[in-house]
Image (cartoon, rainbow, N blue to C red):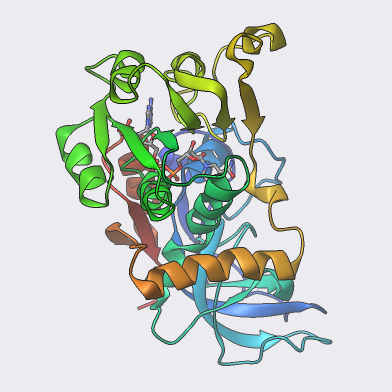
Amino acid sequence: MKAIQIEAVGAPEVLQWQDIPELPEPAAGQARVKLFAAGLNYIDVYLRSGTYLHNFPLPTIPGLEGAGFVEAIGSGVETVKPGDRVAYYGVLGSYAEAINVPVDRLVPLPNDISFEQGAAFPLQGVTAQYLLHDYVALKPGTSVLIHAAAGGLGLLCVQWAKHLGAQVIGTVSTEAKAQAAYAVGADHVILYTQQDFVAETRRFTEGRGVDLVLDGVGKATFAGSLQVAATDGTVVSYGWSSGRPDLIAPTDLIGRSRRVAGADLANKAPTREILLQRANAVLEGIQAGWLQLQIDRVLPLSKAAKAHQLLESRASIGKILLKTHT
Ligand SMILES: NC(=O)c1ccc[n+]([C@@H]2O[C@H](COP(=O)([O-])OP(=O)(O)OC[C@H]3O[C@@H](n4cnc5c(N)ncnc54)[C@H](OP(=O)(O)O)[C@@H]3O)[C@@H](O)[C@H]2O)c1
């Protein structure tokens, strides 16, 4: 079958379009999923470039989410059957025509959700769900600052925070991205490449700062994120698209009783039950219409290197998908 493989970490060119052996039959507890689309995530850039948090073997097939239908099941599998439409995240290898996945990672796809939507929602949707629920109880009268608000994850977080009734401030690098964040409900958008986001956030909150800062940008923003956290406010650090942030001392947090939390999706759905609760909350939002998936573009799987260049060069608004089957 066809897949994108990397034999060494490095620039996007290490993503090689290759013929690889057909998959073995699914093992006990696994299903083979014929993939129609794979979602691109900034985590794929960390993995490809060698800055990923978790270890992985080389050569490897990148990609951490996809959607398609079940082709075959291993022994003992009762929760899915061949022909079922499914999506998943968190198993490496979606830049391929098919993958064997432990069935406890599979989310059934409702018929009104396309395979493209199915590949676009799991990783970033479940991340948005946990980021907006697990740290600060957002409600009317609370406020949140969301960095990279027009990214794949950012646009979902803006919509989710608005749905909960919070005041939403976003940061983005371009006017086009600002328009995209406003279009999904942001109250204020700051061009953080041109404006001082600390001063602007304080201005929008009448000097108070925000209850929650969502920071997946890292080096360029983290110090400022701490400054704009309100008294008792929380900064959640979940990524570093601009590089790893500088270290801080615990004593830096004493003034104004602020908190910093680390957040890794890998720990957030340890059981099938929790995974389905979180994923179904995302699907319900999509079906109800208050959560919209914005697909920036769909490229053929063979163009994975081009897709990485677009994501890394900050050219995308919303989600990039790879089409793994026609
Ligand atoms: N820990 C978790 O559970 C978890 C799960 C999912 C995602 N994440 C993290 O969430 C963040 C967003 O992920 P995503 O997949 O949705 O990506 P994304 O936001 O679509 O793309 C990354 C964005 O980061 C911004 N950025 C700022 N400085 C940058 C730089 N020097 N180089 C590249 N980009 C820069 C860009 O937005 P502007 O152009 O507007 O600055 C860019 O579009 C990433 O850090 C990712 O690792 C974490």
